[in-house]
Amino acid sequence: MTGLYPHSAKVVRNSQPGRWMSNLPEDVQTIAEMAPDEYVCAKFGKWHLGDDLIPQHGFEEWVSTEDAHDANYPNFQTREGRFRHSDYYEYLVEHGYEPEGESDGHLSHTQGQRGFLPEEHTMASFLGDRAAEFIRKQSDSDRPFLMYLTMFEPHPPYNGPLNDLYDPDFIPDGPLLNTKPAANTPLFSRLRSDRHTAEAEETGDATKYWRELRARYYGNVTVLDRAVAKTLEALEASGMAENTVVVFTTDHGDSLGDRGMINKRSFYEEVSRVPCMMAVPWMSDQQQCINGSFGQIDIVPTLLDLMGAELPDHLQGQSIVDELTGDRQLERDVFMQWHGGAATVPLGDAAIEQMSTVPWRSVVTSDRWKLNLSPGDQCELYDLNTDPLEQTNLFDHPNHRDRVRDLAARIRIWQDETNDNLALPAV
Image (cartoon, rainbow, N blue to C red):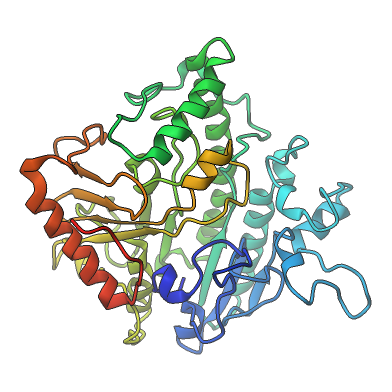
């Protein structure tokens, strides 16, 4: 949203007060503040960059969905003395539901801890309806629009109204299900795998456990897909589809039992290699896969370029418009970061939560090598060309010492260019 890496935007974890800033500072611009003045800019859904309830950073239209972080801010109560609530919280109350807790609309989505809502009242469906309404309104406007639609599903605790849509017996296992990380992989991964594998085995049938979890996860994916469909159908009906860019992506994947783990918090491909689809109707009406590495840091400059706007000098990503048109190959290194820190949800036990505080930096090179560096855990090197499942850690292999040094140098150059001050181990 900013075209900056988290440490440069000064927000390195979700709306969590503490040692690091959790609000997006006023002087850090979002794309809404960089877009041409004629654009109507809208944000629908989760924010995680401070107070979720107040329109800010150039977004005129604002539909809020999460109240859980609101208690962190001094304006938690209105002047009238009542608690402020999100638009989704108010929607649930209007439809006869009791959101969980005084300010816990965050848990009142598809898969709340106390059960789940029918599909038509899930957070995704609510947002799909609101986004469709916005698009219909814009079809009568002379102003172009920029809209961020940020949904929560699919997400732990893997529970929702379509739990039974997919038969677990027909869920593909994949080659990494019920495997364990090797002894020379990060302690953080091994501790998590031991914990989650034990939980799966306690059921008496670990494979069945993982298949049922995946089936529920895919049910939540379908909840999201149907909500996105409402938005795209409204765009088609509005007559604006042919001159509207659409980007579909996500912030992370999920292990879902691969390597015996669940959730995110790793650089393994099943977590970090997320989908990104773009529709640019005036470029092509044919589907094509553009090979190469692409980072989400490049989305803002690409969108600004497509809007005909001047690219600000402070952006840390690059436009890939030339790659979309085929005028240039998509060849670049992609950098990733994990800042560690206290978990906002229980991760299993004290040992796991201790290792979750350890920071990491990673690079995936244009020729498909991945180096993961940490000052407090076992580092990793993978050849994604011959080992796409990342089962053989080559970091300590004597034949790859120079490669480790080369990739570590790329990370350090990137750190210097982006003012990242994490001290990494000497290699």
